[in-house]
Amino acid sequence: MTRTYKVVVLPGDGVGREVVPETIKVLQAAGDVANGFNFEFIEFPCGGKYYKETGKEWPEEAWEACKKSDAILFGAIGWPGAIKPGGALAGIDILLGMRFSLDLYANLRPAKLYEGIDSRILGKSSKDVNFIVVRENTEGLYVPIRGTLDRGGVEELAVDVRVITRKGAERIIR
Image (cartoon, rainbow, N blue to C red; front, side, top):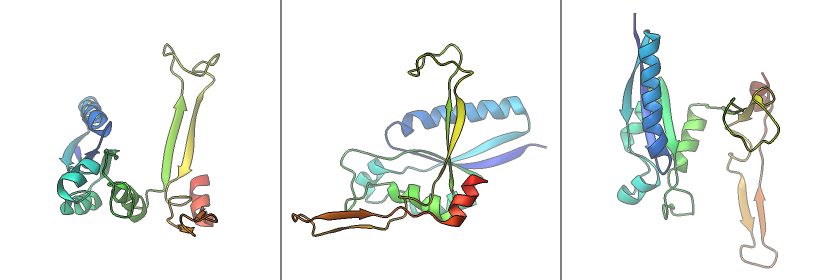
């Protein structure tokens, strides 16, 4: 029996528009080879460019589609001049909103050298570098406890609190 995975595609801005279509090709090829699953891709525009064109970060129906999907393929955000009132990057609410609302707490950052591919890490081979950094994705500096006092004054002070809870630390350590 073939399983179909519903994937919401959010290419976003910049390099996201380049890498997301290629990622879809890889996923489709994996499904073809594996013979047990395939994908239904549902794409929505989003990010800074979309914000500049519409005044919204993404279509209203995109969030509901994300909640009902099996996976979300997110590209990147950041478009020249796409800043919301208050100074936030247009599109950042999509990214952080998904992280917090869907509890996407684990950020996996692999570091691996491949045989035959040049690396900036001199003198090391694929046998020397192969690990994953697991980073908490919903706490730390992502929690918006920050502010500025005496803005523009000689005594101006900026504060940005890094929040680390026992729950957040324990689930990453597991």
